[in-house]
Length: 353
Image (cartoon, helix red, strand yellow):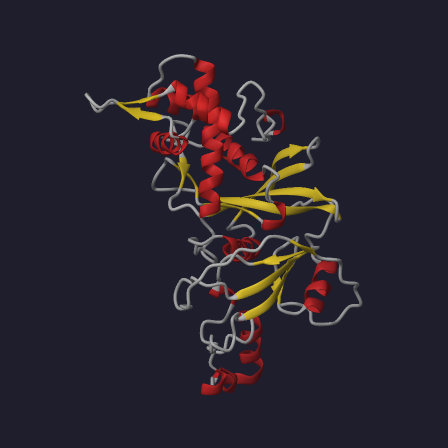
């Protein structure tokens, strides 16, 4: 619940960034339609990509307020506030979105539908500081201005819940918001020209104890204003470094499926470059087992990537499949990829593991 005492704060100038939409008229269960129009996150304003009903109270059929606001109303007014009249029920023919604008704290991910409430909160948010101190520092790159902090779900549940709620606006197939005690969250912070403080720009989550040892990631998300900065590659590179010191995962691991469209493309680009560089440097015949050992990737992820790169060829007489060096060279030329010049997004010297 936010402090509702108004404070006189000048609203920052907002930046418009990309828009993405989906089409579906159903809002029961998992939403296939955007139900929140615009999001303000610090100095940025952008569109949500996917719907998220978890921001709203499940019994408020009018969808007129956020969940915590409706719950507060019920607490103050009693059972009478729960009554939903027919005229108050949500009509998607009259309202395209449940909420037109969501304001989110760029430090702790708390949210409100009222700008003045969010501004009042940000001023005294305990995470509003030059360098974040939540969780544990696991990566520090002073040259490029990025740090990664590990936050454990059971230690900072409210922060992680709000992070998951926010991330769901840009992830189509993830639904964990509240049962986050068994997950660790790795958040990349960076400095932007709009603020002197480090702010969260993306994250990935990882199950602490997974039944499948070869799964090293639950979900990954880089927030819309900070994409095209190679932060996805930075997080994935860090993830595989982390897997090397995680029991059961150093033999070959990868993400949990299904991946979001953005996550899938981020991984395929990362896997493609790493495999092309590895194959180029080895200069000889390589088996799937050897590639998996050299890269730390699962064999099924390697096959998926090589098919995506269109570098596999099949012998018509024997049916055997092999990698075509000529196709690999063509892929590198088409993607302007020079394995000798490729620089990793992650600096191993900055790791604190």
